[in-house]
Length: 238
Length: 291
Image (cartoon, rainbow over all chains, first blue to last red; front, top):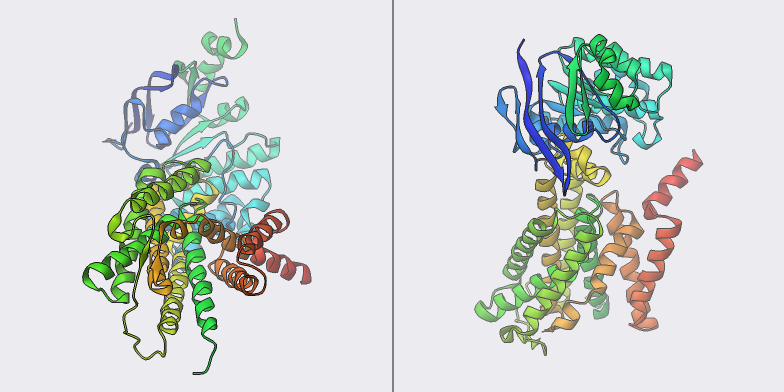
């Protein structure tokens, strides 16, 4: 299978604290990869290194065969890496439609009527069409999560990183977001999902990587991960 | 024309504040980066004009262009040094620029140093009866240009990107917005417009001295006016500047010059507490409630 993302021996330190110590990850084109681990294990730090929020790490990250280690976040977005945030970060002074037009303008270079129509199609797919002209600070939690995914989609990503997009949602809402993510994956988009809701990760992922204390402790199919004693120890303790 | 000369004299100041408030809002309002260094940019414009006038007897238009370019360059430099800072750290850094430049000017004899410099206005009046009327006209043109630029930015990619930066810089960057680049562009344009507003000042007063030119009251007014008018739209700073600067001029004539800052301060506190979205926000609320 063709590799879309390769993380090679990435080390990230915050002062004296090592958040990631020599992490290696390969993600295949079109894959649905789950990233799990207890709080503070380094999941979001790894995502921040991949998306370009952090560039001061050691090691290298290759995307589509090109070294993107020194690229800033907006340059990585233009190459095809988009993400949602653990705590939603809407452009709250804008409507939902305007939120989507930001990536259309800065990644695609256009934000005219054609892009508005395209944005509307994305919003329809997310079930947010009726909220297109609502101010984004008036959305509910699940709507915010969907809008973040829609905004990421407006950047036309090849790789979408969903950072706890289901946190704080009810069971039905989790299923709604899962359906959306499955739908996006069917379109050919590679997806990395970070999630604490294990049922969702197990259902969604083809492969799961488990991080603990900045290191990968195991990786494999959902079936092997749940049975792995290292994972059980990381979550439940000795 | 038989019109009281003071109208033009006061009108110049009001229009100058329209330029300053509009310029401040490009970075402070659209992008949310609060610049307290307004006097530094005004002073660069004013002192560039003085140097150009004294050295080559440059006409007013050249003084304004020169002042604008140098203040724009200062904006770019300040931006490069400070725009990686966020929030209060950026604001503090911009205040430091005022003190650094003031110290330089205080010790620069060519432009009069700490005591200042008297200037003789040239006889060139174009079609105007007096030099003050000409300056009023020039400042009116500058105000129209500044507001047009601010309006264009607001409706452009740049404006959308700056709003995204204000709402969430990290999300903006991850949506493809080159945040540092657009902040630098905004800082340069904002600085250039402030410099343009300051360039005609030496000729307006026929005098320049550092204490008044580097007065931090300019910062209070330049940020107070957009906040009172509303920072989200280009018209907000215009409304705020016209309202506040007019009140200030009336207070100066009828009560005292010292009350100027008090007026801005009291209104600023009232608006921040009672109507944080400014007059534009109040109008929006009123429209929504009357539907």
